[in-house]
Length: 246
Image (cartoon, rainbow, N blue to C red; front, side):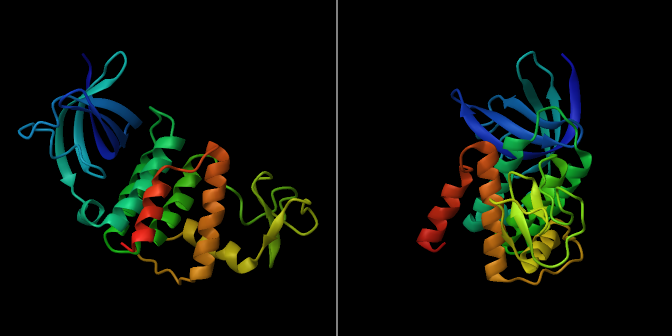
């Protein structure tokens, strides 16, 4: 039995058996890891407090043939708003689902892990909807799936002013290279998306426009749905909250 230790954030869990959970962690040293947490649903289990969504942990795990096993955990940080505020929880779940769907298992991404910790901290202080949209634009940079916004995907020309946009072409197109199916891409929207992608969580302040935020969000969701072939499941939770006014 090989033991290993790692920092981790809980991205998901499913009840398993009478008292167990199957956990999904994003770890600093091993990337996405799925592991069994035996007995963690029992009130006196030493694992009970740590196996909650968005917990930032020090973990000890043992490698298994089919699945790893959680042996010990130490809670490094509990994000209060992500566990108590339904809106923050819903948008945080959107970010977590994105990571579960688009990250390969077992591939270390230490810079992405550091970015996620900044994002979780931002949920405690900032508008959760804006945080979630900016977070996924930023995390896309590490996946190899990011669309291009600053140079024409066909000729490489730096984009100035209004342009065209095509998901299937991979991003922005200059006027000379615009394809028949490309959509108009105003400069203000393009700069807004780049601002979300490059936003500094520690020092930055976002100048928000509801119309541009909605447009950036719609573009992002359409692209994710095109990649997956279906909408992310967390969007139903977000829609339900918006209908109830939470």
